[in-house]
Each structure stands twice: as C-alpha cells, then as structure tokens.
Length: 92
Image 1: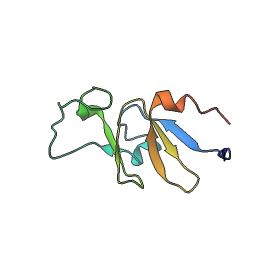
Image 2: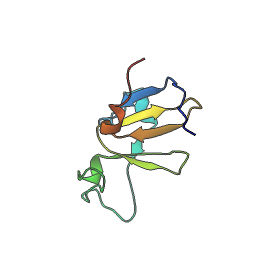
Image 3: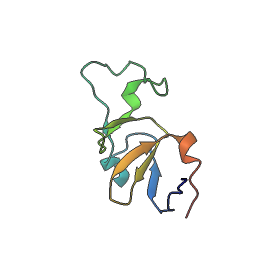
Image 4: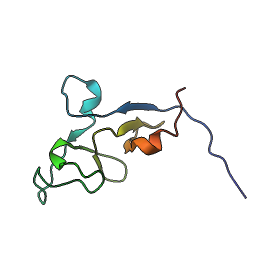
C-alpha cells in the first residue's frame, strides 16, 4: 500500500547567525563541544564551528549551520532543516 502524508502548516525561520535581538535566536544556542575548538570545521557544511548554533530537538540535538531553517512542528517541536531540503516546502 502507498500513503500520502497529510499537508500541514508549519512555522519556519532561516537562521543566519547569532543575534540577540531576534526572538527566534532564543531557540538556537552557540555551538560548544569539549572536543572541538571554534576553528574546527563543520562536518555538514565545511565552515568553522565558531559561527554555528546548537538546537535541542526530540532526538537530542543538532548543529545548526548558517542558512539552515528552524522549523517549529505542529506539536511545538523544533528542528533544523537544510536549505536544499527546505526548498521543497511552499509558502502557505
């Protein structure tokens, strides 16, 4: 059998950098890890980790790369989404 997921409307904001005057930045914290210094490169995008964020998710947490979208799901859960995947979403 084949199934189609029901269309739902979500909230999303593109995260570019840490900026304390934007309310959506309360969701994304500075990325810090004891095994990495700020000059190490991100395994996802290749940019230095100093400019990245961290977001707590239901799966435990994820690195947020500059340009990722922060999606708030229908139950209030938040998670990052890469721009190439987010382009499949359409504005409601």
